[in-house]
Length: 359
Ligand code: UD1
Ligand code: UDP
Image (cartoon, rainbow, N blue to C red):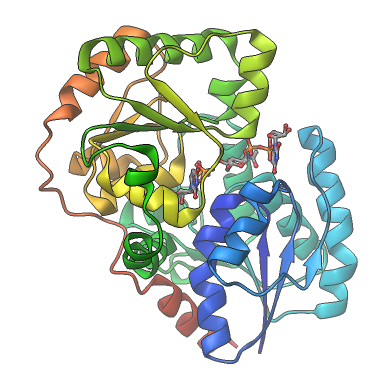
């Protein structure tokens, strides 16, 4: 059987790496299509190099564009490749423009499609990601939600129960496969001259935060309040979208925030595992902090990862300064006794076992 794997952004490379590794280990016939939605070295090639992944067989070179054109362009470029390769199963992850673009092409090419990290819902239809995930769900034949909650979302939308397999999230596989290496191979604490649990780690890149001046300013003001109170450095590897928008809005970075270029996965994991707490609007980082037992403050109004709120690893802070400080106060001395709901690190094995039996 032949498997196709689509990816295009940093989190897709990280979360699909365990599946690619497992395909290599099993000597399966597979190929990777990279849309190149993420194209800067530090969001793209860095991860192939560090995670020792083979180069993708196809690169669609769809680096940027207005959403509707970007989707169309990816789909158009992917279609002839998929028609030629005719994989027995096309794996699509989650909710990016790349996921939707390649899924549309796979549907046009009449391919069997498996959606990994299926069934997450923020119930916020203003997010492009929410539209992408719902459409990809309905184009897919098989669904691999990480949790029971995600499975329920799919059932509510009419997906056949016998096509759904709850398998956990491949991010657990990725964290488990790399955390030891993160301690052995990099030394970020020394490099940045910081000590374990004596700093905060920050990421912020979501369109609804970065492209909205009022929200972005609210987040920066909130961080100012946090630094004024705790006097702990806030380490911020900045996504290029946010860098561009901070310049465009002419916003001032408050004292205490140390801006870095985006980091490699090992560097980021090490900083994440040792942080006092993490402040983020990332999806994957809400999961990783839950797995690593590091408290998380999510600077969004909603989350498609409600499991993290339920177990108590995460809190929703929105983008208002006082609320951000209040949430940091709540999570600062949080007991780290939660159990993580995303699986035992064998998700990629489970997915490939199931897919192999489908044909
Ligand atoms: C995308 C995903 C988001 C995911 C994030 C992971 C969509 C709709 N959004 O958001 O769900 O959380 O990836 O990081 O798919 N840019 C660069 N270099 C790059 C990539 C982007 O400079 O390699 C800059 C460009 O100015 C670009 C902007 O960032 O216009 C936004 O990039 P884009 O890929 O559209 O969205 P992300 O914010 O990265
Ligand atoms: N990450 C990284 N370097 C960084 C910031 C994040 O390697 O400088 C990793 C992080 O460990 C996680 C993933 O990138 O696995 C999250 O990606 P991102 O926040 O860009 O996207 P999202 O998860 O929100 O879709």
